[in-house]
Amino acid sequence: MMDTASADLDPFVHPALFYRGDHEYLQATLPFIRGGLAAGEPVAVAVPERNLRLLWSRLGTAASEVRFIDMTQAGRNPGRIIPGILRAFADLHTDRRVRIVGEPIWPGRSATEYPACVQHEALINLAFPGREVTILCPYDVDGLEPEVVKDAEMTHPVLIDDSGLRLSAAYAPERVIQDYNRPLPDPLDAAAFRFGADDLAEVRDFVAGHASRAGLSGERLEDLRLIASELAANSLDYGGGGGVVRIWTEDGQVVTDVRDAGHIADPLVGRRPVDPRQRGSRGLLVTNLLSDLVRIHTGAGGTTIRVYFTI
Image 1 (cartoon, helix red, strand yellow):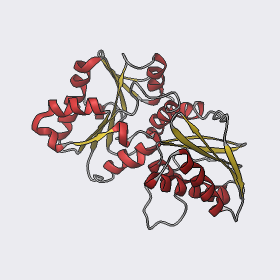
Image 2 (image 1 turned 180 degrees about the vertical axis):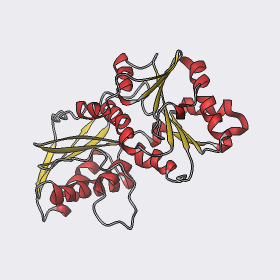
Image 3 (image 1 turned 45 degrees about the horizontal axis):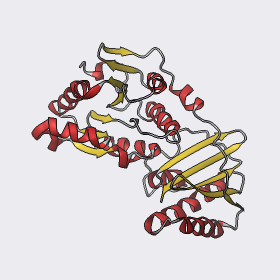
C-alpha cells in the first residue's frame, strides 16, 4: 500500500480503506502498522474485537509495540472517539507523526447509532488539520450497506481499495454533518420535567429516580445523574435559561434528553479534550465520555441532546 502520508499536502491524512475479507484487510493494515513502527511513529489500533485479535495474531512480536483498543467498547458512543481515543493517543506524541487504525463503523451498528457514527467520521476532518496524524478507517464493504460506503466517500478525502489509492471526488464533510443533523423522533411514552434556574437538584432527582426504577444502578446511575445535571446547567447558561428533560426506556436502555432554545454553532463542542484547570463548562464532553450513545439535533429552533444508557 502506498504511504498515505504522501497523498495530501496537509500533514493530516484521513483515508478510508474499503476491504473484502480478512486477506484484503490484512494486506492493507499490516504494512500500514509495520511501516509506522519502522519509521519510529507511535501506532494505535482501535477496531472491533475480532479484527483486533486478527491483527494481534499476525503482528507477532511487533504487537507489543502497538496500542490496541477494542472499538466496540471504547468507541460504542461515536462522540467519545475523538476526545477519548484519537486525541487521547495523538496528544501524547505531539513531537512526531502518529498512525492510527480506527474502525468506528462495523456490521451490527444500529440505525440509531449510525447517524452519530457518520457525523464522527466527518468531524475528524475538522479536528486534526495541521496535525501530523494519519487515521486509516477500514470499511467492510461486504458487510455494510452501500449507503454506508457512499457516506465514507464523503467523509474521507482519500480512498483505498483493491485498485489502489485515489482522491475522493465526493468528499464533503460539512455537508454530511448538516445532512445528519436530523430531528430526533419523539418517544411514545416519556416522563417530562420543565426546569428553570432553581431546579438543578430536582432535575438530578427526577432523572435518577426514573432510571433507578428502570433498572439502572451503581456507578452508571450516578453517571446519568451527573449528565442530567451538566446538560441542564448548559441549558441555563446557553439555552435560554431553562428547558425540558425527558426520560424513558427503549430497547433495554434508559434514554434521557434535554431540550432548550439554544443553538450549538460549533460542531466540535464536546469532542475536544479540556485541561481540568481550564474554567468553563465541559458538560457535553463529560456527556460524550460517560454515555453509551449521544445524539444531537440543533438549529435555530433549539437543541435536543439525547443520551442512552444500557441497563
